Image 1: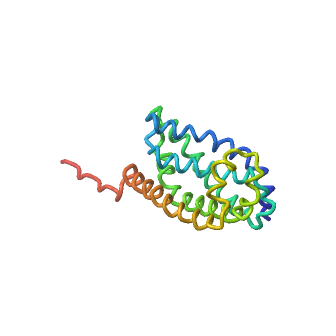
Image 2: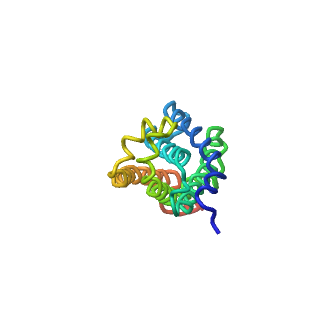
Image 3: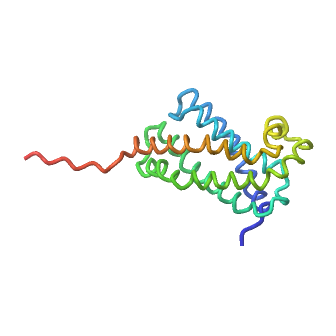
Length: 195
C-alpha cells in the first residue's frame, strides 16, 4: 500500500524542497531573457511550489489524515515536469533539443498540470487546519511572516480556491497556446511534387 504522508514526505521532501528552491533561478532566467518564459507566470508557479514545500516542511503531516495521495500526485507531477523541462531548456540553449523532448515538453503538461494542481490543493486542504495553530510557533520564516496572515483564518480554504481559480487557467492556457505555436495545429498537408 501507499506509505503515509509522513513517510512519503520524509523520503521525497528533502530533494523536492531543494530543487524547488533552486527553481527561483527560473524566474531570474526568465527575467534576463535566458529562457522564453513569462516572468509573472513563472514567478507564480515557483512561489506556489515554495509555499507548498514549506508548509509540508513546517508542519507535522502526521496530523493530516489522507494526505499521502495528494503529496504523491503533486510530487510526481512536479518531478516529471522538471525531468523534461530542464533538459529541454538546457539543450534548447545549445540549439540541440531533440524533437521528442519538445513534444514531451508541450504535451505532458496536459495531464501533469491538472494532476499537480489537484495534489497541491489536496495538500493545502489537508494542512490548512494545522496552520492556524502551528504558524505562531514555527521557526520557518516564510510560513511565519508571509503565509500566516493569509492562511491561518477561517477564510483560508476559499482564499486558496480563489487563488488557484485565478492563477491556474492563465498558466494552462498559456501552455496550450505555446503548444499550438510550437507543435502546430493540424498536421500540414504534404506539398504536391512538381513534375
